[in-house]
Image 1 (cartoon, rainbow, N blue to C red):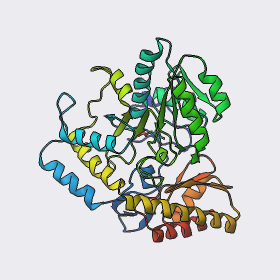
Image 2 (cartoon, protein in one colour):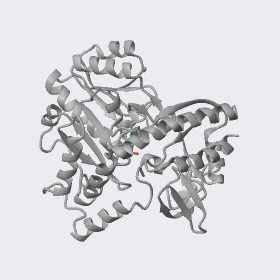
Image 3 (cartoon, protein in one colour):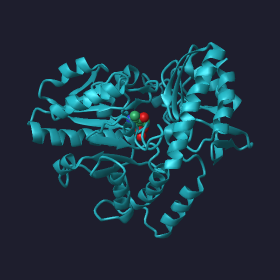
Image 4 (cartoon, protein in one colour):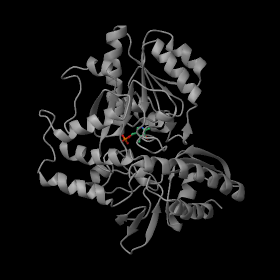
Length: 403
Ligand SMILES: *Cc1c(COP(=O)(O)O)cnc(C)c1O
């Protein structure tokens, strides 16, 4: 870095921000983990942290899982990490077949992250909507409190002023709507809406479970108006609610569903699952991804999807989730420092009176890793393998951190 660059206007870091080799977009906790095992992470001195954040809902099978490690070793033996989408690959096809067999979908497109999956879903929806409804049918509607990613179209569908403001203008034709059927009916009445995207459980905005009646109403509205209903299950999907897909508990099916976070056991992967009708609106050349669905990442994801589909695992997440909710309610009553508790399975939001980041910091000092979801909301995302004992240990530290 030359002195000239540093003296350019705007190049002086604001207080608390240091120029380093990494662009300073993250606030990181003061630790470097060197090892992981199950629900625990360790630093170089051997100090352990109980991880009830799962790397933000990614490590559903915990850390250092032997099955995942075995699949990775096997996949490497054949020497195929990447071959591009110019050629067929058996693991990618097998993974798509596994997702189709377990869902409403007929076809799958693979990409590399959640935001990318949602961007692709918008393209799929527009391509199909134009075909069924004409040139002007392009609008995309997202909900109050939504988080769909940080690329331009997904940011336009994300309801967080601080994330959006520095990067305006965002993709046009994207509207944020209230979580209200009456308002939506009005908004969707004209013929220019192509898609509505919703998280069945809103994650980043505080763990808000959408009302099943609202989702049923939305399904009816979008079906009548030939609007693609997209479920973003990047965070709430793949077992987190105790159902393989969150919407499967609600008896409502989307036209498109996006997945990512836990899909490939911590390797980057996203997926767009879609009905046959929408898949057939997409033609060769309409979309693509250099890395998407390669043989290595697909082999790992196939193993993860099979493991997360295990009814024994899903039953335990459901049962332990009910227990965890009761424990959190009791903790709230005991401490008097909690305003509300919301969640299901292994995704819980806890509204606290203090700044959430302060409580997360105190929990960290005690040996517990949790996330925030908004200024006053803590978010618990335990690995799906966490036992009641693990959760109990976490609850004890959480109570101390909240007090
Ligand atoms: C994390 C998340 C995304 C974005 O995923 P990235 O892989 O970070 O791009 C999108 N939607 C939801 C619901 C998420 O939780």
